[in-house]
Every structure is written in structure tokens, then in C-alpha cells.
Image (cartoon, rainbow, N blue to C red; front, side):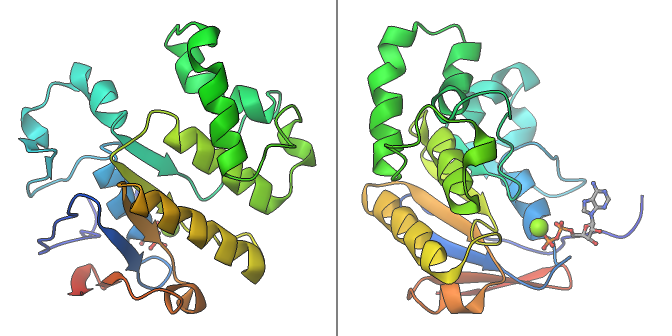
Length: 207
Ligand SMILES: Nc1ncnc2c1ncn2[C@@H]1O[C@H](COP(=O)(O)OP(=O)(O)O)[C@@H](O)[C@H]1O
Ligand SMILES: [Mg+2]
């Protein structure tokens, strides 16, 4: 099965907390986020989410659980043939919700992330920062209790990175727990936040 990527770690992500998850490339940041999103199962060890042990939760309940978790992938994962609005609304449309019940929420959310003028365009004409903000809006559609963001500033310039960071901080002030995986020291130095540092499979936490 190959070597263990993560081991001997115990930590929690408190409600309404804000933290960076950091460590060199290959340290296991993405792997840890995937474990938290339940898209990956641990080979050993216990993960407890919202008070329940993951191994006790039937697979059929995982989609419901994942709605309480927002995730922003490093490569955005927007669908090229859908507009910004359609990409953000997609999770709700797939669930068969009536458009009238979410249309205003999607537009409000897009305005909140600063994409009010980009609602009806395709991803191809969006800049990296705009794509990232569309992906953030999509992750927030279900008002998750925790947002996981994988290297959200990896593809943008420093001013946009600061802007994205302010969005995450604002979201956190509104009550959402936030975990930002990053190896961008300049970004982390802008906030006095908890740092979870991965090195050789182990985790150190600096409060
Ligand atoms: N699906 C996978 N199968 C096996 N090994 C993987 C897989 N994904 C990542 N890895 C390995 O796990 C380690 C951690 O990767 P990753 O979590 O992507 O690190 P980071 O996000 O910190 O760069 C790396 O050695 C990588 O090669
Ligand atoms: Mg990664």
C-alpha cells in the first residue's frame, strides 16, 4: 500500500475557527483536506465530524454530510460550458431545486464575492482570480459550517491574494470555520491565525 502519507496526528477544527494548513509541496495538505471532506477514507485512525464518527456514518448519508462542508479546489473545477451563475447554481439544480428558490441567493453570493458584473459569462473569459471567486461562491451555496480551500491563492497575483484572504476572513467573521491550505508565507503573515504545519507526515499546531 506504500508509505503512510499522514500519521500520528490528533487535532480538531473548532467551530468558527480560522486556520492555515501549511507545509512543503507533497507534505499532504491536499490529502488532509480530502480526508476532512470525506472524499478519502483514512487507512487507520478516527475522524469525527460534527460529533459523529466517520466510520459509523453510512455511505448513503455522506452527500448530506458534505453539504455542511464547502470545498474550493486548487484547479477551480468550473464547467466550461456553463456561465458563472450556472456553475454556482449547479449543485442546487442537480438536486432538483426550483430555480426561483435559489436565484436571488446565487446572485447575492456572486455580488458578495465581487462577480456581480460577471454573472452571465463563461469561465473562459474569467481571470484566475475571478474563477477562484466563482469556485468560492459555489462552495458557499449551501451555507457550509466549514470551508476548506486548497491553495486558493496559488494562481493569482498578490493583490488578488489579499482580496481572497479578506473574503475568507469576512466569511469567518460571519461564523464559518475556515481552513486554507497554502505554502504562501506572505499570505500567512498577513493574519495572526492558527497554523497547522505538516512535515514528513506529522502535524504541529501553532495557536
Ligand atoms: N491518490 C494518491 N495516491 C497515492 N499517493 C498520493 C495520492 N495523492 C497524493 N499522493 C502522495 O501523497 C503525498 C502528499 O500529497 P498531497 O496531499 O497532494 O500534498 P500537498 O497537497 O501538500 O502538496 C505525496 O507524496 C503524493 O505523491
Ligand atoms: Mg496540494
